[in-house]
Image (cartoon, rainbow, N blue to C red; front, side, top):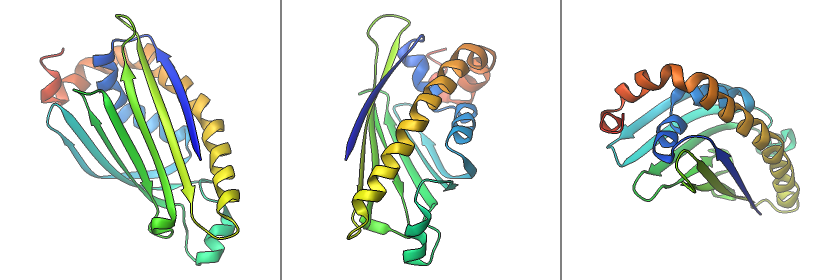
Length: 183
């Protein structure tokens, strides 16, 4: 199953790329997605590419009946995210140690600049649940969750860029050596 969405923001693409990776925005999105606690286990940024690996408990991501089948909590997940500032493309995968290869949750995204001071984030989400008899049902539930939270995430991001980002921009940009030339 695939879902595609696009959101436009009033900010230059280059600056949006840094704001998008900002931990402050990540914490706000965690509230939207009902993430209990995120542990960042890897964070690298060489100026061109950044990679973040996080582990967290994703509330209401996977239906309770799936956990009963495996006798483990399937909502403990790992998120691997990579973004390339030269191609303006990235992806993130959510991996479940309980479901393993039977579960694919991948979002590929690009950030475009249709005009100065405007950025469009286009995302394509792919969800596959390879479980006999219930996989399609789980996919539909996850699609519903994604659609419900996507508009809330957009609102949080837009508000963050308008209200919070101007006040923390310099601090965030200072923390990334690769961003100093941009600032």
